[in-house]
View 1 (tube, rainbow, N blue to C red):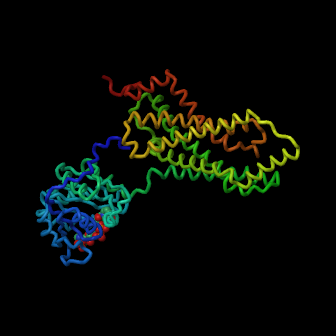
View 2 (spheres, helix red, strand yellow):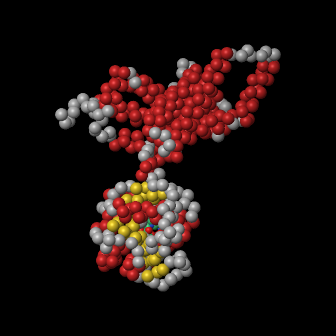
View 3 (spheres, rainbow, N blue to C red):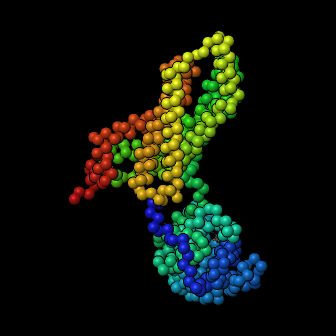
Length: 461
Ligand code: NAP
């Protein structure tokens, strides 16, 4: 997450009285959409095209000329043409000398070519100043003006002045430029539009796999077992009861999985006695998707809240309540209030509510609009300290709720433990190891390692 927003340029467009002419090579979808937007923002636009015939698709205030003629009219030329046709630019090298060329192209596959399209363009025309920009904005979004996706335009290039000129255009058309540095960043920028929720894949598949596993686990114990041994048909449990057992279990396990990689990282650093060696790949990837794991956990916790709130509306619950009342009436005996049960039920509800409240707070602070407004220390306080507190409260909520079954033999149907017990394994392990890690004799060397101290320094002074 980018905590430093200083490289995000101010939104206010720089509005000189007269804007410089901009040339666009290519009258295809993107060239037309961007040209139209630029004309609306006050830029004179001239198209360089293979055909100078004006079609009614081309913005009406734009001029259409041959490539060389159009290029002579502007200092900035936007290349709205696919990379495979870039060869046609080589004969224009002389006329393009010293001009700013904006590469907006994308590829069909990640890392399709050894070098980025922008670097390839710079190699073809070494006398021009190549800037990469606009490739993450779609022609449709520019044309419809909805711009539902990100308004950020990643810009990179080796010439600072050229980059500045392009960023002025970006701002003028109502978008936000984000300076990504030199042209070396172009490959990364070109890969962005090809990615489909890359950070969500592992959390999504893991959640899907665990949910399916726990759902069938509950189905076997709560429906099939009851049907075989007690001759009760509780198949309707599939709709609310089982999901409402699986959701909290998933929320708790995923929340613990957000903090588990940090524990592994600490153990690895303590074992190696240095922070200057890379973590294994799997741990790096796991650390990078902690936010996504946390948000999925929050979604499961929210579903648990909603499913719990509708419990009194269920026919099964009203039947069970009225059965209890009638049985008391028939026996002419009111059951006395069991204070232990009352304490347990109120405590687990209170722990759950507090845990969920902190969980929501963690979710809110992970939103870019919020995290950009807190400093690194505040962010870490919420995500680490309050996060652990939320994990403690949610684990306690589960322990208090399910604890009474731990020693009861009837809880072990087919010798299998209840899912509440299974759900506690990872969170309890995380909390116990974390507790050990905060002991001064462990915490001190770990803090030193994180500040750069090494047990066996590679370079002695
Ligand atoms: P397009 O509709 O196919 O237009 C490409 C234009 O390139 C053509 O209209 C043509 O313009 C010109 N052209 C085609 N073959 C050529 C050749 N052999 N020599 C010279 N010029 C040639 O494609 P597009 O969707 O506008 O995309 C253009 C570029 O923008 C691509 O690199 C794409 O990756 C990038 N981009 C597109 C979008 C999008 O949403 N469409 C979004 C981001 C980036 P003339 O007929 O006028 O010569």
